[in-house]
Length: 149
Image (cartoon, rainbow, N blue to C red; front, side, top):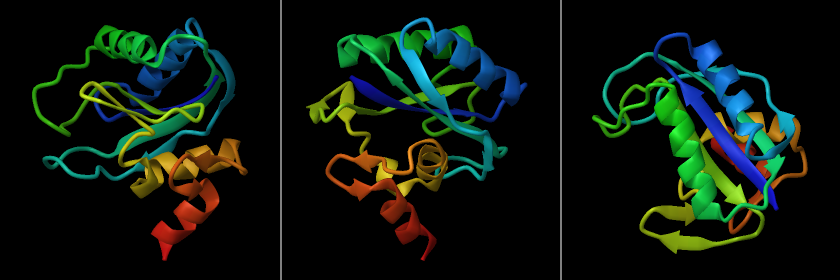
């Protein structure tokens, strides 16, 4: 199943955090593409440093909830804590989409409910998947163009 995962970091050695996360993700999914790293301003939450963001596309046969749990374990290994909602973090991994699955559960919502509003997800995704589509929202290129208007 095709998976799209967004990565972000704005604490410590952000470049190393993202590279380490990619290495760890490679252990649980077959990575097909990794975007460039993008420096972006934070969205929401308290005042904080800029983020380094990227998107990974891969193939995975794990249950989506099991994949989410594995991603949270990678975040924890990187020193991620969840003290301030939308606060600074060493590593943030978001499961953006999982094939054409639509899931609406307390711990997992797919596709990610705010991905279509986030240039820091759409721009790196478009770089590595120009024909990409976010289920229920449309083409990545059109969504990004809409945000830039």
